[in-house]
Image 1 (cartoon, rainbow, N blue to C red):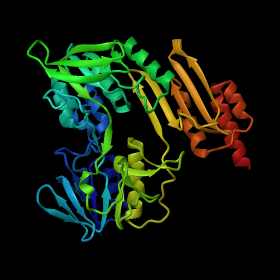
Image 2 (cartoon, rainbow, N blue to C red; image 1 turned 90 degrees about the vertical axis):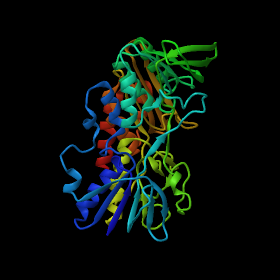
Image 3 (cartoon, rainbow, N blue to C red; image 1 turned 135 degrees about the vertical axis):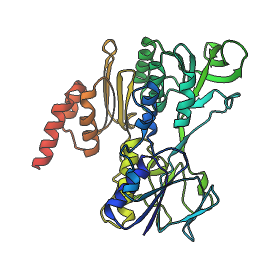
Image 4 (cartoon, rainbow, N blue to C red; image 1 turned 60 degrees about the vertical axis):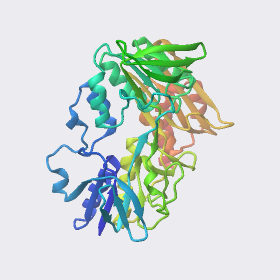
Amino acid sequence: MKHLIIGAGPSGVVAAEHIRKFDQSASITIIGDEPEAPYSRMAIPYHLIGNIEEEGTHLRHSSGHFDKLNIKLLNARVEKINSTNKTVQLSTGGTESYDKLLIASGSRPMSPPIPGIGEPGVHSCWTLEDARAIAALAKPGAKVIQIGAGFIACIILEALARRDVDLTVVEMEDRMVPRMMDSVAGNMIKDWCVHKNVDVFTNGQVTEIKKTGGNHTFKVSVKTPDGVTELDADLVITATGVRPCVDFLDGSGITVDDGIIVDKNMQTNVADIYASGDVAQGKDFCTGEYAVQAIQPTATEHGLIAAQNMVGLKGAESGGTINMNVLDTMGLISCSFGLWQGVEGGDSCQLVEQDKWRYLNLQFDGDVLIGATGIGHTQHVGIIRGLIQSEIPLGPWKDKLLDNPLQLMPAYLACTQSATIQ
């Protein structure tokens, strides 16, 4: 059996390793389009901080790990899939055949339509090559402008701040991390960043990046409700979101929406082709709709489920992915789970302790917890996820939580024990 995996990130690597675990005789090839050992993009900020060397970003650290597992690594870009004769066409001019194919091609940064965005010195922070370029420019005291303040952007933000640069962040929405935080939490994170000497423009839009011949490389025009501000910059970083890598799927017959549509087995609509990780659009646990969940825990879970189904093991299914984000922004821990924005007709409660940098918001549908947003309450992360995922009716504990959201632990213990007894 020949297994071919497109993508050398966490999802593809986990899938390859588990295919080998389940089938000692299978042929396994991972195709990656970067000239690097398989690595984690989420580790790049830690490399920029200086906590780890480049090798520390690698997914596996033992010498000859993939050789020992008889997993072939191939450096090339897949340009086309022919699902009829089960081959993929490579940028090298060659082809690879498969019996089972896993598409774990991940995502790529989106580039906002800003004049000057393509200038040398304007970088995303997505690859090790990007990290090398940023490290060369982000010296202590350098003026750095980061466009975007979403989840990934905030991880990059911390790495830049730790390099002692003069950092300014520009976000189009009215708060930081708008896809994971409500207005109270998002602006609390903004206040924290300002408290840590990072300038933040919310409701801001970069309208132009101009090369200059002065002491600094760029003039960056930022439009806000108060007018246009021009900022100097030695380095501009774009962190305005990512999108699934699906460009090479034209003509393959594979159904693509935002990402590749997959069923509970990570199977696409085409026989013997699976998808996992950032490129896969699977069922959302909370809504029942299909969505892309571009986070590493989901990617690794997808890889395992796909591997089991590719080798023919029964019972490996995804029950749907819970929207789950935990973020550390310069020491301030924030999180959001499930339907953190709530549902129409649902109840909610919140506890705001601005002076202590703490916040907790719970969302209910009937007497079931369906979503939450938190800052500073790290002790509740596991409990919140457990209550949402188990969908346990809270009964009288719902009113107790509405009165005091900090009663999560006793609510969890009481409700789970009751469910076990029944």
